[in-house]
Image 1 (cartoon, each protein chain N blue to C red):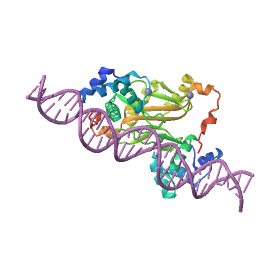
Image 2: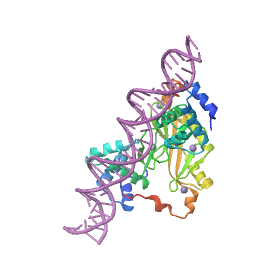
Image 3: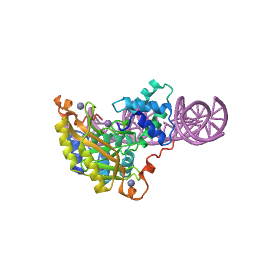
Image 4: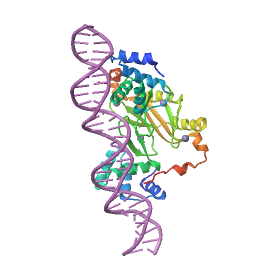
Length: 154
Length: 154
DNA sequence: ATTTTAAATGAGAAGAATTCTCAATTGGGA
DNA sequence: TCCCAATTGAGAATTCTTCTCATTTAAAAT
Ligand SMILES: [Mn+2]
Ligand SMILES: [Mn+2]
Ligand SMILES: [Zn+2]
Ligand SMILES: [Zn+2]
């Protein structure tokens, strides 16, 4: 991750925000999980450590951390966003069958970002990169992918 | 786009779905726009041509078209999804200041997908690739990007 | 340590996006 | 043409997120 607990909270203070216990705990929860979490999931964990925490504060803090570049969120095709600390490899493979989310890094992306700067004058500050498809496990199960291509039931 | 009107509707029929006027019109609206549209925006245009169309049908049809691989959706940081026909270049630059969405293609991505197949055994069927940052216009305006880094107002 | 004050919070209402329910309609095969 | 499962429209219901506002609190100033 781009910032440990101290670094992250320091950034909060330096930006002129108060260092409240709620913000502390939310940051800790984000740090102690290796998975993406929805706001609801984060809030549930926050309340384990700080029972009177309110959901709105979790949303407000996640927004704030995002503005500060400490947190990013992705949309894995579900109805809600998923949050995680910024800075680690941020490319996702989302299996359409089992729902598994595999993270991967690639040095291709660094090249792409340089190209974007050169060709489009665009400065990248964050990215949301998801490849949807079928993971190796699900492919091995022998079920034809085409069988799933249309699971629509009206 | 991957499929013209005829091809797309043909695929619908071939998959065993009825070819209703609502579906026709929704497909036409998608085809006649070069921009990403929210479900609400799409529905508004659909009603211009077919006033008694219901919003739920627009949602249902967009889901169906997505299952069939005819439509994709992206999440541009707003609260709602944006839809467009599948098949054209699908990489997006989203300006955090002016909100502009620039589309771009890159042959890097083909390579990445091949690498994913080789290294992870993952078969890509769709992708959602967004780079967030600041477009050339907004950068030229001379406003320091850092000034915006935290627009949070409590 | 006490005072002060704007920032932050909790609770629940409100809002927005999406899905569901179900009675009525309809596309398209027989 | 007849039939019926598929589809639809309307609005209720759900889910996710933001807003409102009275109360609390971090932390700067005394
Ligand atoms: Mn990640
Ligand atoms: Mn696009
Ligand atoms: Zn899988
Ligand atoms: Zn811009």
